[in-house]
Length: 231
Ligand SMILES: [Cu+2]
Image (cartoon, rainbow, N blue to C red; front, side, top):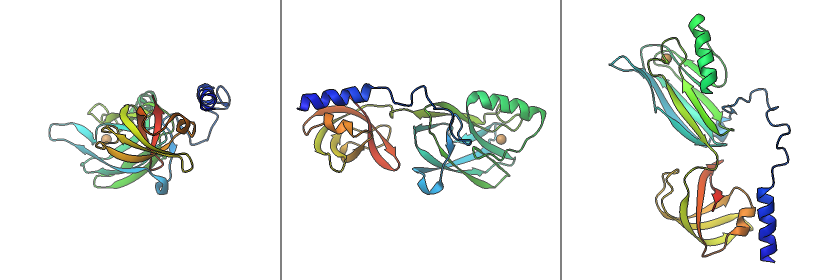
């Protein structure tokens, strides 16, 4: 019985999704490659970003890079603590280059959900859902600012990246939860401990039983710790 179930699960997991090659990309008006506007009430986390000039003539963002899990909604709280106007634009590197060239010809003030432009001393917010995996970019496209250092990478990871070793303590199919004694979860900056996780796919529950030694990736999905991949 168990063997048959496992076989069915493996078949289900390896089957291509029904929509493959279909309507994907047709999507919403607001949806971009880098993702789509999110709702502040549903943000998974909040990140403070500072824009400023430095004493040695650079212009910077702090932090200078980001890494998110696919599907995460981030509330960026952005402060311009410099003496010049700056902006924060999320997009693909290619589109930023193109946009920057246009800005060099004509100063355009953006008012799109993926960008905010701030006067010195001002703060603003962007709530964004990173719905597609890939490497994107945040940048200030005001002429000269990109070249002075105002850009950084945004990595959106599929499946959370780093595998962590653990031992299954308990499986609760009814609630869809698994208790795992695990090593340090590097991506989540969490030390080794025993915790309860949800699973990204219910089929994963069939593969797990108490006592199993596993390797897994975990991410925060809608604020809940979720196992996104197993091996
Ligand atoms: Cu700037």
